[in-house]
Length: 192
View 1 (cartoon, rainbow, N blue to C red):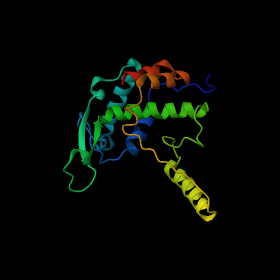
View 2 (cartoon, rainbow, N blue to C red):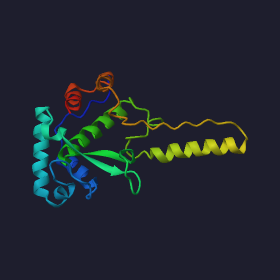
View 3 (cartoon, one colour):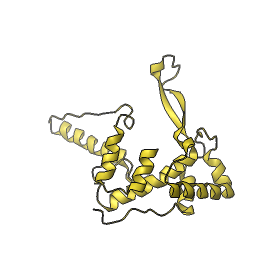
């Protein structure tokens, strides 16, 4: 069982402001058409967003519009002509991204404080952990040591295609249960 409880309070205005402030102003908005910049420049609209997020939190059900995304094809290289030379991205509504950023921050905090994640191993998604830099540095040092000592070294890089989409959702639900994530949060994630 967890030593530190999950923060189940309604999202605070401060949390919403921090997420909006940290977001890239030039990010393309999703189906709602409202970019982060609108919330950055219009404090009154930001307060309305905060009120909506609190209602969603109390209700425990994600807004249907947040489940929709606009797919955009991005060329991987110049003069791309074949479909294999493009990658897709999904543009989600800013409002849903703000909401789930709060859920994500709180979930990360809960998992770290209860030592369900070992930050010496897990780097991705950990605030302040320069994961790529640290792991690249370690691999570089191992390669250098093997080269200098004329030793053998096998290195394997894995890049999972559609990494999150390929994980069975029941497995995500099981992991949330095993780590004692409160049902309110688990239900929000699974509902999404």
